[in-house]
Length: 307
Image 1 (cartoon, rainbow, N blue to C red):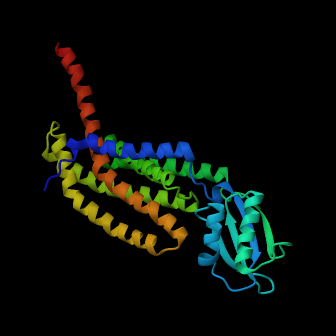
Image 2: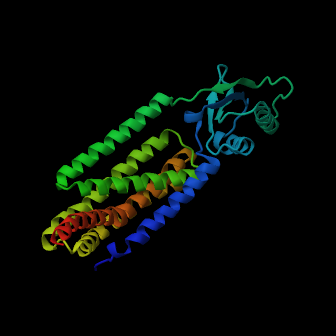
């Protein structure tokens, strides 16, 4: 079965453009949801003095009062064996800190006049410095440039490399849009998720480009649409099936994992879907467009000379 992918290039480009535009609007209005590692925050350690479950008992209270969608709530033991809870959230005002302590104190019958059960409270600085952010950005940029060079050399055509990078940029922008729209916390998982998505997407794109390269010998230079459609059709089953099996596993992580795992699994699912989409509907159409543009540029001077 041959799919007519190239003929609907405008549609394939419009769909992600709309998603990216919506994400950009959310970013302008609300910005990204920077987690403690990037923005710093407030730390509180409270002696509960009795058995409790940090996830089901304390975390809902912290979420409700602070509005932090990804608080770090952990059960710890004090020097005397007391049952304590460590809470790390985004920066709180003094009023919010008091309200949080009083809510927990009310639930467990703790002292609210002298705050004797409040072991420690203070601000915490970002663990990911601006230097580390700069290094991570540099590393990703260098990786993209090296991939561009490698693909260009492997396929002996710079258009393959440029098309692959266009697909990667698409994937990154779609995931960033999802981070802005759904207020997904940007933390250490963000860097790992992005690198995973980029690696997955480029592998899928190269598989399809291998088919394009092998099929070029059977088509003339004016049959680019047919070449693109046949190559994608021959690879689409493999790409979709591989993506489905991968997404199923990540979906299970999202459904069964703890909150921090869910915030890692969700953008991975979006990235894998975006990577499959870009490999099929972005990379090859961009390659066809670049080749058509090259043909027009080479044919125009010859016509002018003939005239």
